[in-house]
Image (cartoon, rainbow, N blue to C red; front, top):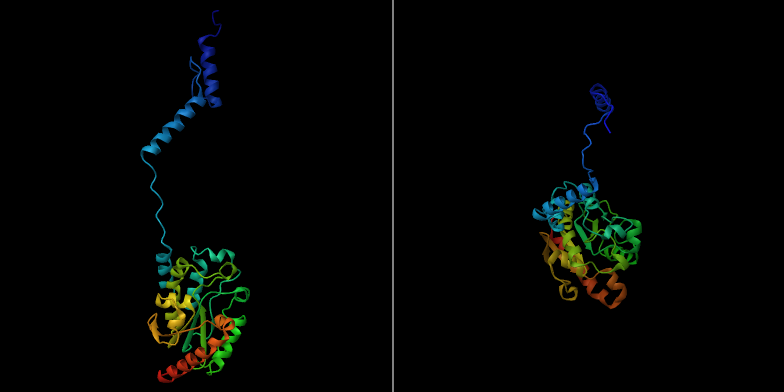
Length: 261
């Protein structure tokens, strides 16, 4: 059948379609656009296989901890850096970050292991039964975490600022991540000496365990004189060990009398 469309009418129709926004003419052969999409997808897949995307850089939590700790100019900034540290999963299950208690600038700094249930609730270290025993031990040699006088005050923190699930022991990788923060904490608090309570504290400060062999012997940790002692929680379970702890407390008092204030 011959078309009755005149050239003028065809031109007018084309102009009308262009005005409507048409940009392509209809071809003589039908075009399967779904097939084109599949081909394009396969082409992209082959291109990616030929030149895979570079793997994301591997993050070293210890290196990031060292960088974050080193950048903290104050204790408050160090606390903020700990709170923002993304690589320790313990904080996801903890109620509070347990940073420190006592007086910064005190002559004695006590390094505990990790918060327990009471510490996690209160947000302060050594507030449960072990903490109450620690306060009595310190009072026996004239020290008090609430004292205003730096000569009588103590400053207390833990290796881990978050409570481990079911109060389990900190794992080696957790201790390694927190060690740079502990070192910076000691430097900013600037005590005259350290008390390392328990195996975890000795591992963080001395890279050694074996508190029954280490206790009572002055050593060095984080560049300061350090005295390993039994953890107060251990003394609650083993009251007979209080005799050795009393000797350690006397050694601490004697050492403080030798160090100029």
